[in-house]
Image 1 (cartoon, rainbow, N blue to C red):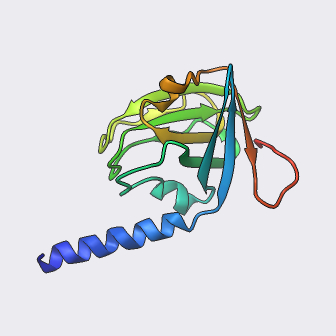
Image 2 (image 1 turned 135 degrees about the vertical axis):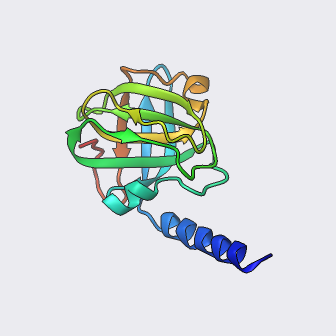
Length: 152
């Protein structure tokens, strides 16, 4: 392995380690059936910009929850993301307002929420359809160390 490849591999490992250190939460999607995901939380500008970049796999019950302080129309892309993802956009009431299925790895096309949201849940591509997750369903978040669930 040449020196540039070694530097790249080291950088990827350091970035992955930084993302793994993110806070965790349990997200539940309530529909005809409930589905739980153990998610990393991206609540800072730095963690939101890193997202799931450089990941080569994601467990079926895992994901990343992007948290925004105020409702806003947000946009995502798939730069340096190696796995397809479903992006689930959630409003301040905890309702799913849009799902962008199967976002393609490395695609830099902007994927918009289309309306103000406070959360975006990223899970494995195709999993939302497989589980019957759809707009109108509700999301709750269990934050470790807190007695109540909340989405705001």
